Image (cartoon, rainbow, N blue to C red):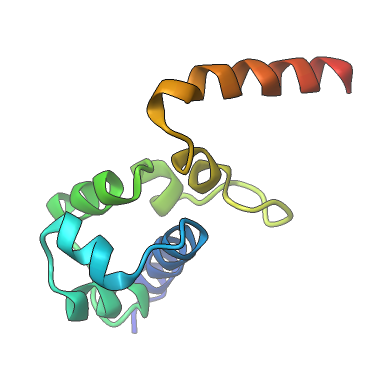
Length: 104
């Protein structure tokens, strides 16, 4: 098993589980097989850039969050949390976060 593939797969699984999505649902949205997604998540297989793009779209996340992670081991993946917010409400959420940070 390739360590890099395992890291990417773990991040994909964490994002998917945080969003409470099944492998079947994500695989269907990404137009890949459930088994292929399982193999990616467990690090048994790598993926092409096209598949990475499909998974980012299905999970409403960025390639950076999958390739590089959240950048901090002490916080959950913020990209995954934001992905659960409807697109039309994300700007309002960003403003709320700005206000909270200003108070800190």
